[in-house]
Length: 210
Image 1 (cartoon, one colour):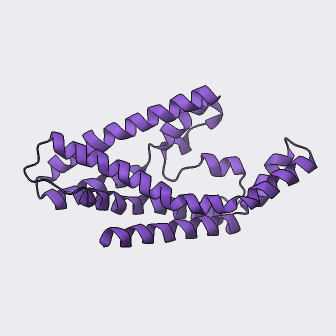
Image 2 (tube, helix red, strand yellow; image 1 turned 135 degrees about the vertical axis):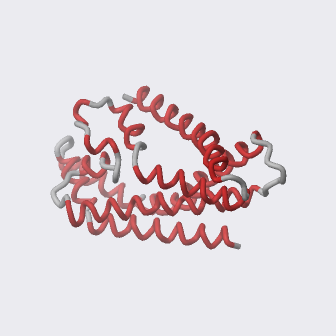
Image 3 (cartoon, one colour; image 1 turned 135 degrees about the horizontal axis):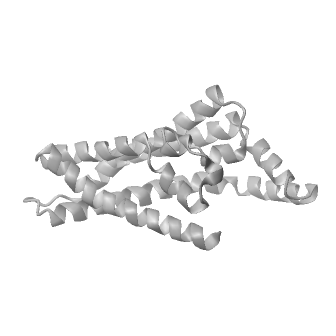
């Protein structure tokens, strides 16, 4: 029951920040300005019309993304505890709950980003929105000198990811009732390995599409 509660709260928070961001940050106008630099007026209008027609997909896919991401993280934690030979068997739904709790950290990235561009950096482009990641190492770098395939890995080096890591570790510690350092180690090995694989996949795909 708690898993369903957490899941639906995450969906609502994600819907809300996406909706508010589109309205408050004038995403349609930014997209129009960017396309106008590359295409003729008729092509821009057709693309915007198509984008508005399929805008619902962006909302519909949110529950699926949360479900997939949380399931994969839960799977990593489950595998990690298996190899660490935890004495008692832990149901997968409990690992899934830990992953859902961690998702709240990632959802608030969107709110932080919204606040940053609405209150602080009010003069921005669509590219600024795409490349900026709150409290990330990449924000102090010159993006003009960075290869595209390195952008996402560098965005991942951020304080929200650190907070996410420790939320997973703390939640796992409460579940296993072992040493906190052991839970952190399990998260580092299991989730950390999954994250490295994911980053490698994204970098590979970026290289092949560029």
